[in-house]
Image 1: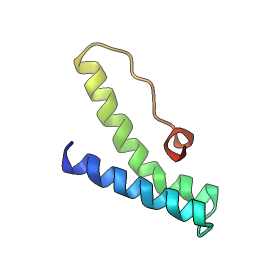
Image 2: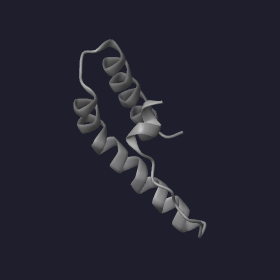
Image 3: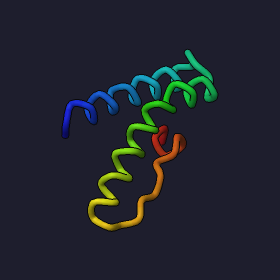
Image 4: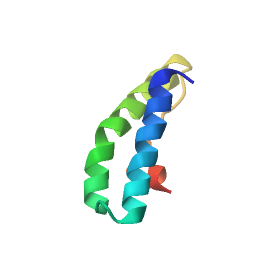
Length: 65
């Protein structure tokens, strides 16, 4: 994994923890995770295009599970 992927994982984990502890609401967590999701989906689309495969977007609800 590259540094960007590791940082994305840490950021998502921090958002999940804050949501679980009740520090932020679901909508606030979704807004905070949006830039991270954009990065993940952009990277995924690039990789899928490279191997000529369809790409299925990662959603917020999938990340929070």
